[in-house]
Image (cartoon, rainbow, N blue to C red; front, side, top):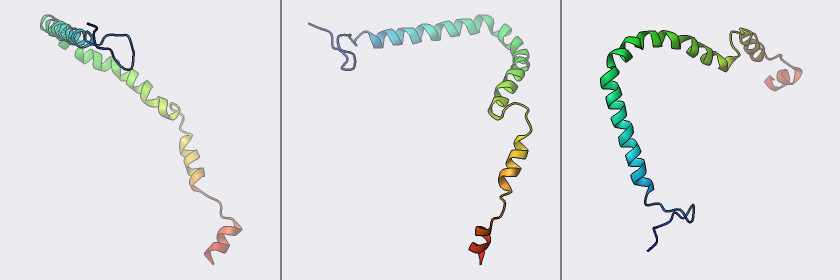
Length: 94
């Protein structure tokens, strides 16, 4: 008897994927538990320094969205707000 196949990828059995995934998750959970139990003091001791070391990285990535420390964005915003009045705008108000 043939194993059931996945309709999206014909020819590959699907019955082994779920146990493999569950086994991997269980292994990962056990590994994290034992690493935490054995190295808790080291991890918590380094945590304040890790936060301080992350500050420059966060600063770099947060300023990427508005071209770094270029403060000319205020001038561009002010120019875009000040719309010069034309003769058409005067006529529409009458």
